[in-house]
Image (cartoon, rainbow, N blue to C red; front, side):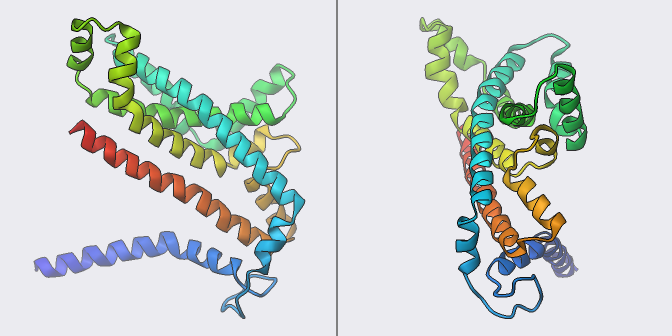
Length: 263
């Protein structure tokens, strides 16, 4: 009976993994397909679509814009998310949970609502959509990612550590630099990697805040809608998968190290 239960569990796991990852594998396979139109089974394999994609100025500009937005958004989010987590962790009032709820609300709301709200805000102040409005939009949810990681780490840290530092003559800055920051470093790093990955492939918020500029997700959307450059679309999707999977894997490693450090 126990053996039958284990078989069912593994069958369910395999089915779920297949449902999640088989479409991704197919897209990656299409990136190497010799046919100009995605079709199954593949008629042959080639890598010349990668060269064509790299030589496409529009794709390279979209890639550069995506990297710039993701990088700058992550830097600001690390600063804001870490400071917010430290402030909430030190709060002892009944409003702490309310403040925490407000901070995580942007990631809980559908992206289309966040995008529409940001577009309305920029329009109210007569701000033209530009690079900086894209960054502002991405900061809203990247900050939440960093905050969630850091606040979870801070809640596992005993207050006795900072109290011991104070007893030994350390001021607030010294305690932060020598005690708190090393203990939070892995959580901050994991939050930054996850924020970068999420920002790099975000399309909904970017749609409302980009104006005439194209990030890679917007370029993909436009190419698919017009039915053009489909082989290049597959290559770009493959690149986005790599750009997002690597930071997520590194973040998982840091989160694991953070848990061992906490124990």
